[in-house]
Image 1: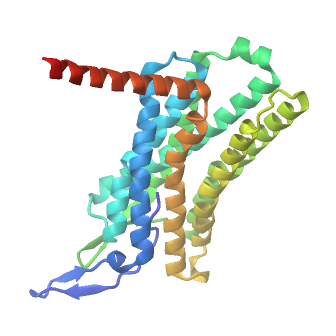
Image 2: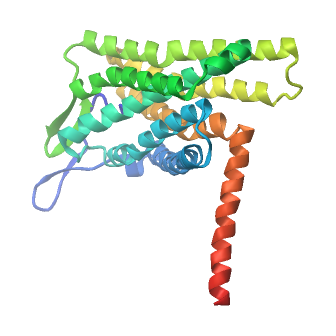
Length: 321
């Protein structure tokens, strides 16, 4: 993710041997430290939550269309989480220490998983909508094979949209400090890429998700298919979470295309906060899309209880021996 698209080179000091050393402002910045703590917590929650989803949906449940969606989404989110330590270290040190290849690679992978995760959320929304509107057709035509093909297509599209990070990501070094940033060839290129990401990564997905869940809610209420208010609350939470997690990031990315009109410290703080909200989406997805399902809850509880029983049984066996 673009933690730094532009940089101010300042805050240099000299050590006893008159060597220029850059001193990070982060340790003394309340906002920076707070965001680092939040991202670190999100990293742990996201890794554990998505790891549990992969374990349950990949090894403990029968392979179905739904488990295909959940497994793919969890893989996307856990890979996103796996690369967060690079961003955490970069934010804390306010310099890039991993070289040009990882500068390009980590950014590309993060965008790849950002888009793949978003596209999978859209696919899940459309699938749920079709299942409610055309239940008979859906039952006859929804297959694991077709779902797998759709997942592959989503990843291919995500790869295409993540390529600009590999092309334009670069390193700038000054006085021993290296910064990984977006080295766009022109302001127009910057605006085109930012706008395409906004449209493909937010406007279209948010519109589709909102329309699909609105149709589902309307259909359920018209047919009185459920007496519980839980489905409506969950769907509202899904829409609100997507909006809150993604809109601030895209807003500040678009503002950055005209950064001469805004204070750079405001843009930098906005991008950091926006990226933190994006990161939150990686651990909220398993909660909202997976753990809310009764079948997954039951399988999860039974698997955990089975593991605990086996562990206690082994301990008891060892103790008796």
